[in-house]
Image (cartoon, rainbow, N blue to C red; front, side, top):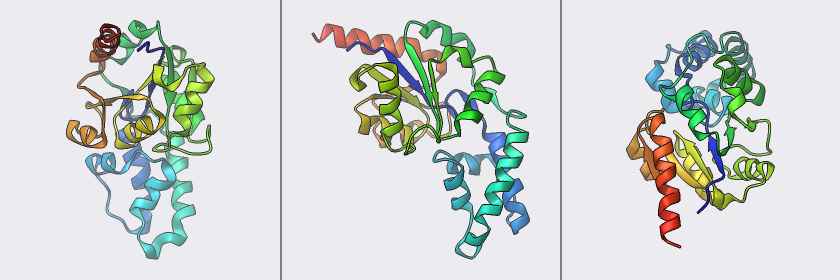
Length: 223
């Protein structure tokens, strides 16, 4: 197997954005009478994009307030995008070690916001492709954005892999025929990633060059 494309999720994989997402969600929900959510609670809710995130915290009697809540969330989040967000340990040092591969970010965050986060931390130039929730007709866990990223990179899916911290990344990767590495440093546990069907587990970002090298070596020895 010749890995030529590495696809990364963004939130929970490249950056820990949980503090800013929590602040924005509370800004949207507290005026509706909700108690503030903790960072740990919000980590459990994120992964399917902003609209689904807001859906998850509204009860049936509050559905008519969704548009208002979304507007409040987006306004706050865009204004405070990286107040608390930081790259995970090892990201800046490890990405240059993967420069021999094509690299993409496929996020369920909007493309412009994804690019802004990457640029803020000097990470944007490492990636050939950045796709967000508005880059494809479907979002993860659909395989569509991953297949589109591979197509744009000129790579067949069996020569790609995805690194992601949630079940949505793993499900999307498996459906696309792409190898999956669960990012156990992110918003989900090792056990949850394995239950979703992750092919491999990485416990820190700096593990990735070794794991990818082992994948390629095993494929070569099997020929």
